[in-house]
Each structure stands twice: as C-alpha cells, then as structure tokens.
Image (cartoon, rainbow, N blue to C red; front, side, top):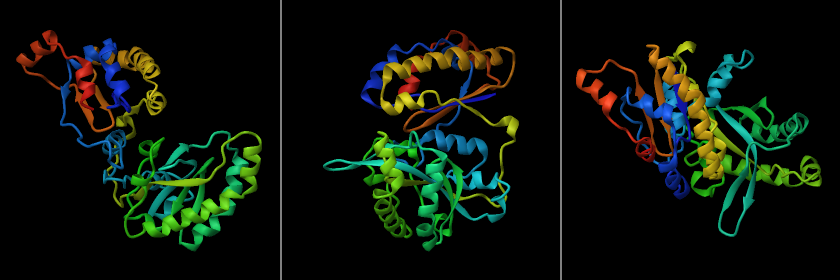
Length: 315
C-alpha cells in the first residue's frame, strides 16, 4: 500500500508559519516505524515538480527533467492512438493575464468551458498546428493530445509550476521553441476575435486567450511499467489550497487527509501489511517504507520522537 501526497509542504512564508501548528497524529505515529529512503532532491525551479517525478518513478516512467511523457502515456492507453507511437504533448487551453512587467497564467483548466466550445476551438486551431506538423486529437474538454516529432526533445514546464506565476522563465526553450512561440502568437491573434470568446465574455466568463504545452516526451519502446496492483494512491486534496496559498484551508485539508488516508495507512501497517508513504513539496520528495528494523531501531521507533513539521520543512 503506497500513499503519495503532493503539496505536503511549501516554502511560502504562510505555510512555514503554519507547519508547527499542524496536527497529523496518524502520520506522526506511522513515521516512527518506517524507514526513510534517499530523497528526490531538487528545487522550486525544476520544470517537473517533485510529485510528478515521484509518480513517474513509481510508475516506471522516465524522469527526465521537463520530459516525463505524460501525454505519450495517455496516448498509449487509447486504442485509436496507441499505434502511432512517437512524441506527444498536452495542449491545454488557458487564460493569460498581462500586467505591467509580467504575464501570468490566470486560469487553467478553463472554467465553464463546454464540450461544444472546446470542439469549436479545436476545429479553428487545428489547421495552424498542422502547418507545423502537429496533429491534435480530442482528449478532455479544453485539453487535447498533440502528436509531433517536435516534442521528442522539448522540455516543458508542468502546469503546477506556472499557476499564478510570471510565465517568462517557464516558456519552452531550445531548438524547437521558436516554432511553438510563433504558433502561440498566431493562436492568441485567432482567439482574440473568436466568436466563442465573444460569447464567453458576454456571460461573464474569462476568454480563452492562449494555450499551455506540457507533458512532452516519448513513451518508452519497452516500458518497465509498475503492475497496477502496486501503483501508488495519489491524494491531491492539498493542491488547490496550496496553489491559492490559502494556508488555513490547506491545514484543514491536511487534517482531513490524515484522519482518512493517514489512519488507513497506519491501520494497514499495524496489520502487518507493507506500506509506503511519499510526501512531496515544492523542492523534494521523501519516501518512507516499512522494512525490517534492527533491535536498536525498533527501540528508537517506539521511544523516539520525530516532529513531523521538521520533516515537512525539508520538502
């Protein structure tokens, strides 16, 4: 049983102040009996955040910076696309907001975007992508799968990295980035006057004025995938509050998570099951596993104290 928790901590001032007050009794007890593994080290500027790197590793996917092939993995799971192989990306519709000195990603996924609106925009945008050798396929409302060799060696930033941030340092770089930046400019001009956006603005919704490319890469030809029964359970209930930096709500979500999933993991450990816990912050991911312990370590697990907030501060 493997529990993975993204956004377990942040280096934001409000989160740092909240951590010492966080009460997570079930995970606190559990961690006294688990053995820490080598952490996944990184920083808050990596294109792939720690929870994506940790999940990719747990699933048996490549963990190359900015090139975890999430889109290619999704395409490989679809019967009508699996035969295509090659490089893939996600194209997510979004809203950018221009400020005096920066441009930020204001909304993604787009709220109140209907399937009909998404399909209409796909039909309008597809010919422009096709001119650059990119084929778009419907996936979800406001998010499409894109197939092209351009994505084979193109690192891109996870949407979780760019939410509410200045987009400049997160834009694609490298040999193929020029084509994509030109394509992005063309799409911004197209979307600016598109009837779909006229209707959205009329009803008080944000217009779709850009797209974000992410999840680029190639699915391994002979993947060493994790069996489904061994896949981790990802609990992402901390995400929304963390991205809004609403730390009181985040702390409440943490306590609810501990009372439900933390208790279940602790109960499983007490019943003799092998358990694993991965906590992911903005910079690093740390995993703990139930493993046979020596006598000294057993006493340490029983009598030692491990302030959980100290561990979270390191993430």
